[in-house]
Length: 246
Image 1 (cartoon, rainbow, N blue to C red):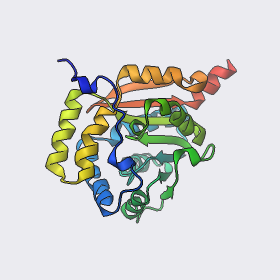
Image 2: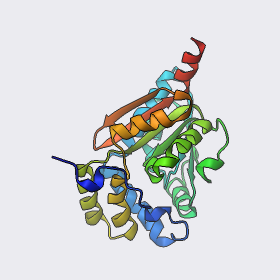
Image 3: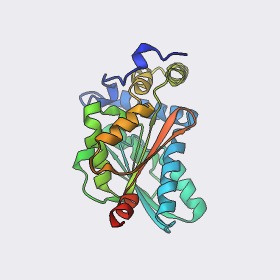
């Protein structure tokens, strides 16, 4: 089946969540409802897939740190902590978001978890080498096409070992599934508007190839399609250092 015309190219429309002049309780509710959608569509799995790959590449160290940018309430990191516990890995996670509502919701959600801290900041305000791995789950699609290389560069700068990007495959089946799920699970204005739009702002294989060519330094990328219409993109600094030494 041919893809609908409105999904042929990435949408450049802004999501309601990107409007910093709005927010309040309606946004906090949306973040809670988004956790339901993330569980339904197994949103954590591609992030874990990428983090595990970089951890193994690093020699399976006993301690590993994560910085999750655009984290929202950071719920996908529950899966990372469970994985780390099962392997005896000392993991600490920093959640970064630019809205106070997201930070408040993340602090509430992880209030009993000492391994997680929450920081309100913009991606481009972050320092260098702040964590082993920088992750972005359903984060990169918020940027316009022209902004994507700088966003990836910012994530790389903040990481020591590499970056894991988990984002949506722009496909009519994914769009339909999210449109329906949003209306079954929520009446929140953010969810109803931003859920399907996030799919329209998602990526296809050609988009990732184009972005890789536009990003500085020609860093090696691993890009894999994952179940339930996701992409896991892993950019390894270690691979780059190995190539530089050869």
